[in-house]
Length: 173
Image 1 (cartoon, rainbow, N blue to C red):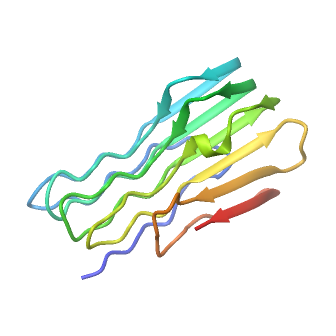
Image 2 (spheres, rainbow, N blue to C red):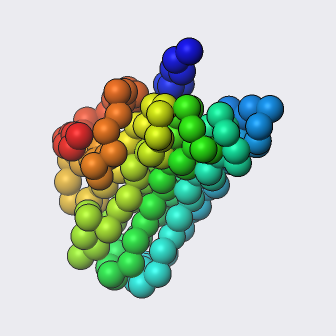
C-alpha cells in the first residue's frame, strides 16, 4: 500500500502547534511529534541547538513523528548554533518519515545564518520521505516576511502549506 501525507496545519507566520505523532504498527510504536518552543528576548545568542524534532518510529512499519514548532521574537539574533524542527525517521522499513516542523523568527537585527536552520523531513528507506518544514523570517523593517522551504537534500513527493499573508518565498527542493 501507499501512504498519504497529511496537510500542514496552523499559520506559517505563527509557530504555535506541536508536531503530530507518526503511525504505529503492531511491530513498534510511532515516533512522537516534536514539541513547542517559544522564546522572547532582547538578545538571543545561539551557540548550541534549539530543537523541536519529531521522534523516530520504534520498529518495523512505524512512522516518524513530524517536527514541532519554534517561535522566536527578538531584537537581535546571532550565533553559530542551530535551530531545528526536523521530522523523525520511520522505523526499520516501508513507511514514511515525519514532515519537518515550523520555525518563525521575528527580529530587528540578525547575523544568524539561514543555513543554521534545519527543517528537513524524516528520511525513509522503502517508504515516503517527509516533506520539508517552513522557516518564516520577518525583519521588523520589512513590509513582507521571507518564507524558506528547504529539504536539505531529502527528496519528497509533497509539500503542503497555504499562504494568507504577504511574503517572499524561496523553495529549495
